[in-house]
Amino acid sequence: MKNIVVLVSGGGTNLQALIDAEKNGIITNGRITCVISSKADAYALERARQNGIKTRVLVRKEYPDIASYSLAMKNALDEEKADLVVYAGFMTILDEQVCRAYPYKMMNVHPALIPSFCGKGFYGLRVHEAVLASGVKITGATVHFVTEECDGGPIILQKAVEVRNGDTPEILQKRVMEQAEWKILPQAAALFCDDRIEITDGIAHIKETSV
Image (cartoon, rainbow, N blue to C red; front, side, top):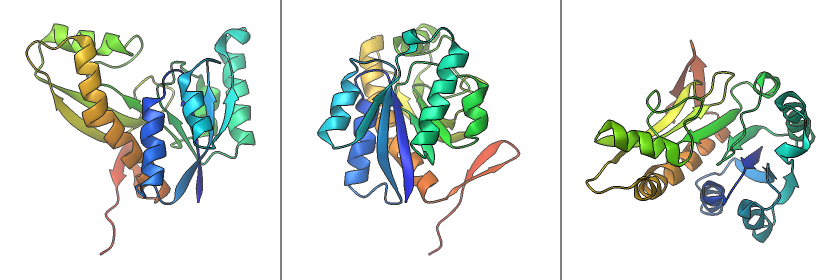
């Protein structure tokens, strides 16, 4: 049974999707053992408490720089014996200390189809604003491994979502969450816990299950 540690900063809707997936038997070989928030007032912490999950708070503003914050996070993950670290609306980019300590053991959900609309500065509503401004007809979400390159790690799963006439960034954000993020993030976590993700030449491959 793998220990899943979830990193959060806000409302925790993706965390809720993971909690529900564990309860519903989608994630069978892992359990959420700790939720770590970068903000003391994040509602995600309340979601964790309601489900009996341990919480920790590491407030970014209490650390002088990203290096000291990243070290504190690495130490916290070590203490929690994390097998898988999931970014679920975690808004801080940690430095290479953490990526190197947990290679191909950290995953993030991004609200677009990488390699489009990703990288530094593309987060939250900014992603959906850029999607609408570009005129593309399809967007979606991507779950990828976290590496030293922002949004540049191996892609695990992607799901497409239609862009519709009259969409606002808020409407599109909600559709991408409901139709893509909340589905593929738990699926990716389950695949990891089932040892079904293999990295070859920097590309993630999903191993088929034996019949």
